[in-house]
Image 1: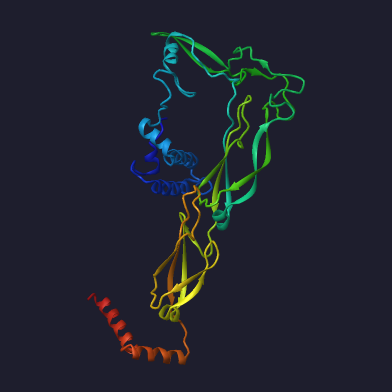
Image 2: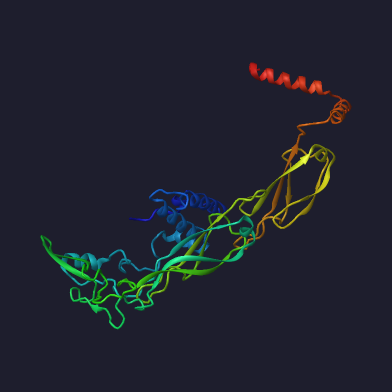
Length: 371
C-alpha cells in the first residue's frame, strides 16, 4: 500500500509555515492518540501523522521530500526493491525460475520501537525535569543468551529449507515455470530448528522484563509532543540493535495559566476602583510574581504584554510572552453608603442611575420589537 502525501496527512499546503505545521500536528496527534481514540485505525493514523511531522518539521528532510517524495534518492534505478518489495530479478525469476536475492533469516535485525504515554504537571512541562519511568519490554533471555535452546544445546540448521528460512514451490504455467517462495513452516522462517527448548523462554529467546529508564523531560515541552530515547525499545534480533522508545507527553491543565505554544495567558480580575483610578499590583507568572501598573480608566478586555515571561521554546528558539487580560468586576452587593457614592458619581458625571436604567430598558424594548 503506497504512502499518502505528507502534506495531505497533516491537511496543509506546501507553503505552510513551521508554526502551521506544528499546529496541524498537535491537533491531529491529539485526535488520533491511542490513549484518547479507541478506533481500530487510530494507532496507524497516529504513526502516519507523527511520521509526516518528523519529515516536514525538519528543513533538510522537507527539502529532500519536496524533491523526491517518498522515493529514496540514494537508490539507483533498478537497484532492487526494499525489504518488503522486489526488483527486476524477482519478477524475472518468478516466471523463469532464476535465483533471487532474499533476506537472510539469520541476519541481525533492529528491535521494535516502543511508545509510552507520560502524564506531567504544567510546571514540569515549563521547566523540565529529571525523572524515571518503568516500562515492560522484551529482552534476550539470560538463561539461553537469546538462542531459545536449552542450556548446553544449540539450534540446528533446518533440514527442510537448508537454513534459508524459505521453501520454493514450482508451478508450470503457459509462460513456463513459476517459482513461488514462502516462509518455511517447519522453522517459521528462521532457518533453525530447536530440538530442546529453553525452560525459561520456551524457545522464544526473549522474555518480558520491566526496566527503569532515566528520562529528561525537555524544558518547554508541550502537550502531545514526543521524545525519542534511542536504544530503549525492544531488544534486537540475532545481535541487531535495540529499537527506540518514544515518550508522548500529556500535560495537565493549570488552574490559572493557559498555554498557547510558548505564550501564557492569564485572566486578571480588577475591582471597579482599581480599573477606574489605576493601581500597581503583583501579577503571577510561571517565573514568579512581577509588578504591573494598571492605568486609570482600564476597561474589561484590555491586554497587557509581559515580554519574556512565557515558556522557553523546546527547540531553543527564544522565550514566549505572558498576556494579562483584564476583567473588571462589578460588585453584586453594595452597602447603602456605597450606593449613595455611586449615585453621587453618576450625578457628577452628568447622568443618573435612573437614566441608565431607562436607557437600558428602552434598548430591551426596541430589541423585542425588532427596531
